[in-house]
Length: 214
Image 1 (cartoon, one colour):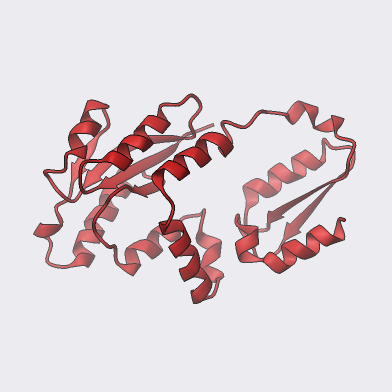
Image 2 (tube, rainbow, N blue to C red):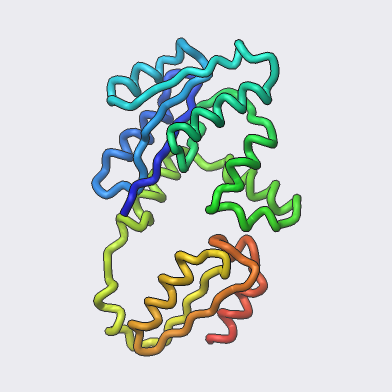
């Protein structure tokens, strides 16, 4: 499985960054830290990253006359490095709404742009509240590369299994259909107008699909 390309943005000594770097060294970790970027040339975390042979970059916010220009420079650097995931680890700048929306338009979040403004704001606040340590633990414990592979034993299940996936999530729809083909008693329910986060995007349809299969 290809590892996700991650950039860590810092402003200081990089203590949170160090936790992420340490986690990424674990066997089968699903992400690779390929860039550490700081808005402060003197940030001590840059030296820590260099010691780990991780490429670094500095984009000093002081040389830009507007936040939009600074954000555009950050965005260009991230795209040039083919970054897929951005981690803010003690990054002491507030991005403009345009920057955040551009990254939320990535395939993982794109279908969520259909949500109402209040729901999107609440979800963004929840994500911003995540700790680097908690995210590391989540990827290490529940990341696909860490889960045991029971693919060849699916046919042993003797209980009914109901699988749900969003219609916009082509990858997981295909996986669910393949799993059903291996089960003794399996059913796949495709949730319309939904992507990867079913409970956020269409909770009422998820509840109905579960009740139908009970």
